[in-house]
Image (cartoon, rainbow, N blue to C red):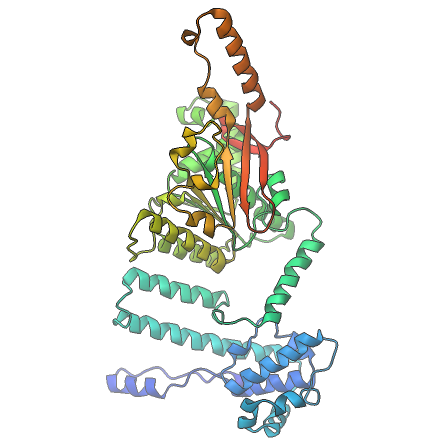
Length: 507
């Protein structure tokens, strides 16, 4: 294998003319012998294809003829389902009908491939060499673009945008997405769809995606699914942040638990972009919920020795969670995308929570004409992040004041503030609603009644209604692109800003 690797290039000289001459003479990394040997091995024994099919694509080949042959062979093997033999005999008709192969020599070239084959034992090693050369070629292309753009080839991109574009290209390459962006052969898409269906079929529980920590929500949605944008909206004081924090915390717990069962570090993490609250305030909220110590008492220092010990013990347990908080105010979409890519590259990324989208700014360099267009750009960008990183993104959103003018204050899709594109871009739209909050404001006042008896009757009726909605909340799933809609009843404990399944807690 040592003679199959690309020959290292000598270091450039210090003379400027020498540097230019050497750069002109450089040939992009490629190993045609390895490509031919691998193709010959696959045609001889299809098991060689199994050893490279998980990472090697036609676009990785440097030679266009070899790339074309690999794609032809791949299609035949995939169609046969591994049951038939794909070799030079069974593919003779395909070879003869290929003008690309005919231009390269036809049957003589195929015979050359068989002569280059040295056995299927080293097939994966040859595939790695081919892939490594492709990575190096991509790096050269990215580096060239960086230099050219910095010299002004793209005057429409300022410095920060060039950095973002470069990081995106490097991230795609690092995650083996550099060959994406064009058409996808249908059987590849179909195979992926079948894999997802098989995973759901084999799963013993109700959750296929990442758990939200809310049983009834997971039953209705199947959990949080990659590439989905979920909007969680509500009026102030409804508990949007508390509910989103609950979901993020539960997802991080699930990732840690799964890693501990396998005896390895977590392969994913949860990112919270808290544009309204500081990281310390968010951490205090989580600690308050888990330690069952009121956040208000924590801020005042009004806690006893036993409660403080419980507070410290819970904090020690929580510090192992794969949970990351960014509290940059008014963060731009481009900065958020860049930080998500970095986190995905260094720790893995499984969920992104944004609190909340109206506090964000669009990508640097964009100048939307109106607030509606600005919000539209932000929601489109969040959906793009979900698709690019293949993770669910939960974005919190405010609602317009028109909710307050109705007798029934349960939100509707038309209440989403500033842009209908929020509804359009989202895969799911959810509203959190607490009737107790509004009923609390309608407590009868004695001065409003002519007599004590009437006041007492009104007060008792109010207390009866309050008992029916006490510590209860509704999660209204108004839109779900891939499933049913409906209302999910939840438990809410204001003292600890804690949400949970309705039958889990006792009043």
